[in-house]
Amino acid sequence: MDATPNAANRSTATSVRRDLAAAYRLIAHFGLDDSIYTHISARAGTGHDRFLINPYGYRFEEVTADNLVTVDLNGELIDDPLDTGINKAGFTIHSAVHAARPDLACVLHTHSVAGVAVSCQQEGILPLNQWALQFHGRVAYHDYEGIALDHGERERLVADLGEYSIMVLRNHGMLVCGRTIGEAFRRMFNLERTCRAQLALQSSGATSCLPSEPICEHTAQQYERWDSEHDVAGRDREWEAWRRLAGRLPTAAVN
Image (cartoon, rainbow, N blue to C red; front, side, top):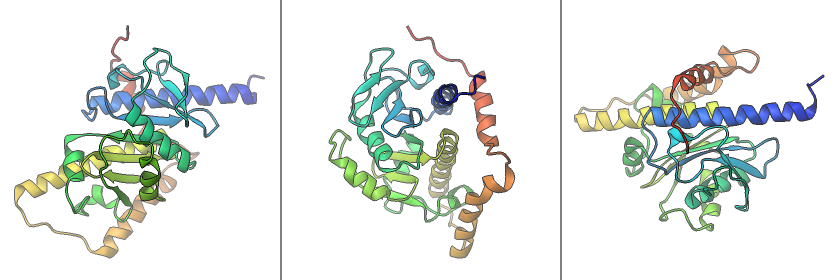
């Protein structure tokens, strides 16, 4: 008789914490972290007024399900297990998206070398290969305004994001969102490979071979249908595979 609403909510909250901690470990494992900076956030519980984010001053490999910070959309710390606070720029970006897009559960922001390099290119993400085509016509762009400490930028950021889930922060890095943590991680993993492949081709000096516009859009739609055509009972099999990897990764000790 433990399948009560309260028990179900606790189970969901625990699952979100574990998934978010796994995403942090995976981002660190693939070298997409940036010292103690950048962030991944996820909605906390069933409400839309608070989210989980990393404790400021800790590397991604040190993030665990238990030390995540809970903050509301006004910046009030609801639960801060390590008494560290949070990155103020991270709050600006993540609170903006969580407040404006209740359809999204996770926001992931990186400063990888490849992502930053592509964010500095006027053309942005190019439709060069299959990885890139999942983002075709589905990427927003936000002009650089300096370190994101001005809460006034939130309005402009969400206006630029619109209904998209992927955004290039020009001269800054990449931002992806997902309906689940797994979806956000998958998108960032593929976006990073897209950026690396683009830079590799550009540095090679070779002539690019671009697919036609109809093929670009056809492929993007195939990506959008992939989960529904391959999985059952709401399972995200790719995220299950990534979680198995995360479970084998060491978690740094936190004093």
